[in-house]
Length: 253
Length: 206
Image (spheres, rainbow over the protein chains, first blue to last red):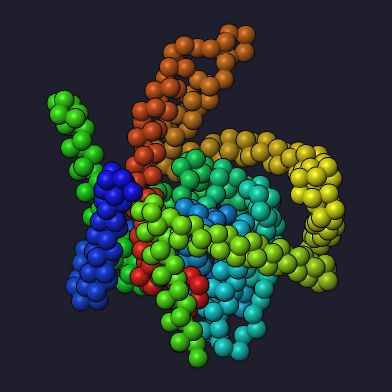
């Protein structure tokens, strides 16, 4: 290993360690300290209301988890989608029609079934598992979208939560939600799909809002803590970028 | 019984995650992370098989219960079996499998892509009705300028001013915005990964 490789590795490790330490500290402080509340994100406010309405009206929530490969760098957005699925299932578990999850990747589909099953059983242990609640609908972008559309049309869906790794094909899913008159909340990690979501979804989640879902839906103190650490690092990066630009301007770099 | 199992699961997940992370940061440890990732790919392959079985069972159920649109379920099952046989007999890159890919899957996906164009144009117009304020107007105007800047105007050709404006939009404000979003996504990814690493998020159950 060369000295440069070692330096870059140590720098990366330092960054991750600092992030992890702050995450642990904020998680520990979470219950004890009254911290500044987060800004309101309308999508999460509407989602909380939609879950209650779905339970009352006997309709279903649909969580579209996208096509994130859990062995690749896009796995984080898939995990964020699973967190939302878990929270939505927990909140709607008493409903006659529990949430339904669709995914375009095998391991994500398996995890969504596990998530749905464990949440529903935590509320009613005698409940029989329903393998059709966590579905694989297609493996290519368009076959996945084509497989999701009939679910939105035929399964009494009142709210679509589209949160995962998508390309521009996500417009077909959001449009299907629009056609049946359901609420559509959508977010992704792909910049091109974010532009599409902004234009087509009723409640778009832009950028890091996708990863804030756990904190806003009350998943655990660690989610709230991670959001605070993200904010600190974001400000640090903004200052670093501005200083870099200034240094470049005065020919220091 | 469940608690010890959860503990073992969490310990395995945390150690595997740490080893892969160290492999990324220090190339000398790459052999360990490579091995773990290879195992993960094999497991993902099995998960894919489970997913396909799930897809079939859902559609067989639709047929059995004569649900709305069960004819499409029948088409899916027939296509699934045909594609499986074709790929099984001629190998996944063999003649029959490639024929299905090139003559059925590609045209169908290209059709969906064409539908997507119309859907997006319609949605952009609807955006102006749905949301008030300056942002939707900027969004639609920018999309329009970029489109016109990309495609030559009939019987006139390229409009130099629009082409250069498109170039400036994509390279300066769009790039700046995209980088800002990507920084947020990267921080979110690190946070999600670390939550799994410290065992606060357990997508593997519990």
